Length: 163
Image 1 (cartoon, helix red, strand yellow):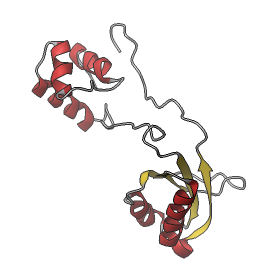
Image 2 (tube, helix red, strand yellow; image 1 turned 120 degrees about the vertical axis):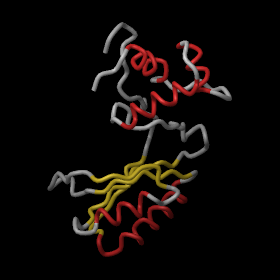
Image 3 (cartoon, rainbow, N blue to C red; image 1 turned 45 degrees about the vertical axis):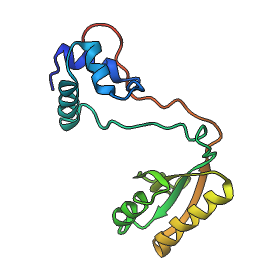
């Protein structure tokens, strides 16, 4: 996949986030000498060809009052995991859900789902909802509670020329 210098400049201009203004794509475009439509079109092309995976908000859950955050891990029957994983991922209190390879004997879990709540008790009730949905397809589970915020960033291009 080849990208021109404007694509690379666009990536650099947005990689730390969009400006918090009413028209963020217009602001980015103004900084690059292009209009808002071209910014959006170029980002859509890059998303379509896989250069960008997604464009989305990364909230600070702690600042929003969601202090009981836990990665739930589940040992789910492989025959059911795809269907059940989609159901779990669609729950409104699950921010992300994905399948991972087990690493037995120490790590039997193959389904991960992040839950966010205001209190541990509230979070445990959400975990119980997931457990009920998984039913007999789940052999074991655990919750890995967040104790601090980790730096959430993806790949960053250096400020220099080229890729």
